[in-house]
Image 1 (cartoon, one colour):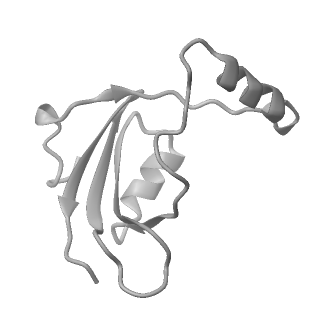
Image 2 (tube, helix red, strand yellow):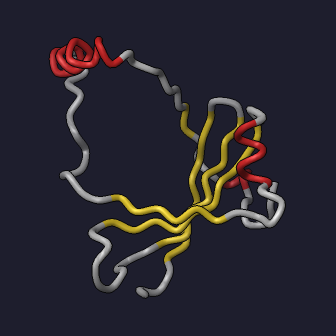
Length: 111
């Protein structure tokens, strides 16, 4: 793991990802709306912009493609459109250990 990530002091969360066949998408959306957990959007619709950073050897990408159980990715993320000034960007380090994930945020100056 890289030098930016002190994983021992981070709060990890469990994350599973599933693929839903396109022909079942409408049925799955109804399932989510009717589920007793009352799944609802957390954020209003918005643009999420990400600029991924990589090493010269493409370490992050290669770890992902190889299915590495312990990996990280580094990105600059901001919300809003792509015109004009970038407001409230942050450097984000996402760390994955098996199916547990954590993120560390570092604010950046507007650019």
